[in-house]
Length: 498
Image (cartoon, rainbow, N blue to C red; front, top):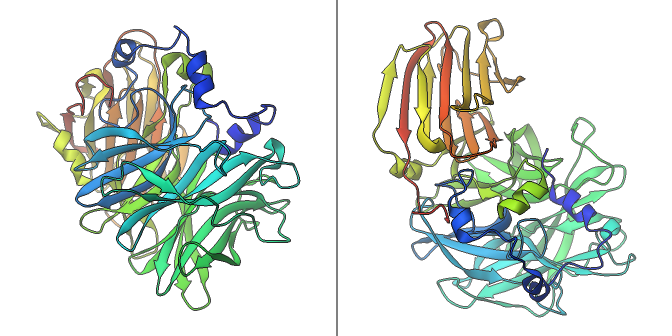
């Protein structure tokens, strides 16, 4: 399993401090991969967003503003491992084709974020875009919010200087300087403000000893002076993902359909809860809960698109050893945008945004071709499999054409008609009566984004040695297969340096 931010922070406990930009620059060696080697790496995706080199993680502050989509994300400008967190910036007309911008927010020496600009969220106030984020600096153990690393987290604000969001001016002091008095928390980060009536509200991620992950709620009239309201959400005994000092990271709360949704990430997975929100008592009553994605997917963040759809982004993590992605010179990527919707029963639905269809070329379709192998050239393509309304036993195997190594396996057994098995893990499918099974796959370099019936998502990383391979998709079964549609997908850049 790839490391969570919590584990990364723990690994920093023995370090005197985070390495500064200047020190990293002086320490650069000839071992750093060149742009040529990066552009020729077949494991780098061709249509997912990632920086030209080095490490990235959480999506931060995505926003549609003045006709453009802006994506900010956690970024280490000096190495392909976690550390020295900045906010990088990319801009797009369609959420698919991206243009890199200069780093948007960097640590300020001597400031509250001198050790790192951690995750946060965009807001619009008086016609201007701002970012509320967590700043991190070294501190005494007494004042630390991350005890085992002696790091203090505070909530900060930076306001955009122009409508291009190309530069920001920070408020000199944190707007939330410490956790509530008397609360013994571990972790205090990831603000996500929303506006409701005359107030701004924000959840803050934290954890309590012997309880686990929790979310604090604050409110403000002006985004500058904040007051603690209550513990908004907290791990219950029925919630199995638990460590004594766990933190419910990257919380976000929003209305969707006739309900509200709470997102948070913990123990290497991103979770959702849906239910009803009492706006007077500020009480959220969750009724349903699930996992957003069962694979390499963490720290999701949402935004509204130009049409008002709720768009979900996630950090696709590496699952190979740090030594390997450091040697490769890059790590992590952004997921494709997923449109969220709310089903009548309160469960979350998601599908890849239609904008991704602009990448399609040379559509090919097969009908009733069980046993047929499909080739996705250079692991850059999309496929949709549909099984009949009463599917029989089938298996879909995705593997490398040269290595024959299995990269993902999806199985269905009609004896357990409400389940589908992905990489040997049975998952509840909850199909409507007579509903066919639809399996949608996006394959790109070293990642598979899988969505089944808009209910189950699984992001899978795969790695191989040597020159580029093709992905082969093999359906094993009898007459369950109704149709297969597949497309090669066009890269979003000429050299993989997206």
